[in-house]
Length: 114
Figure 1: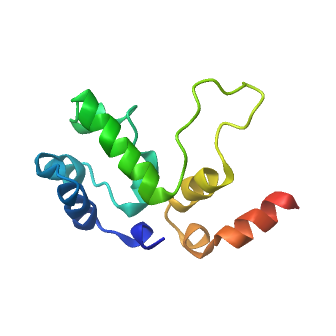
Figure 2: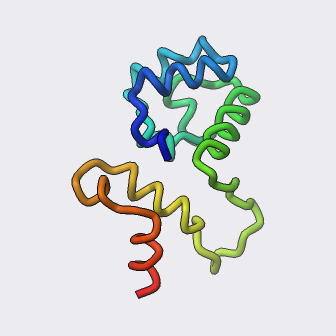
């Protein structure tokens, strides 16, 4: 999970490497670091200044691939959990602080099962 240590510039270079150099400033001006990538989706890309729907879909898919999370199912039951374990773990890691920094996926799963 090296991406969690990415700076805003690292994220901007990653966006550029995907073929979207025009969006580098959108990510740097909004202080999107590796920890904040978990929150990047089609829902909030327009707030960053990215409004081309095809670009939004591609960027969201690449973020999910990088994070190793699946696309939320549109037909999931309301009784099902909103997110899978990895997504919930990454949401916790997106925060700053000693507790978030030291949390490992194994610890997360152990705490969840207790």
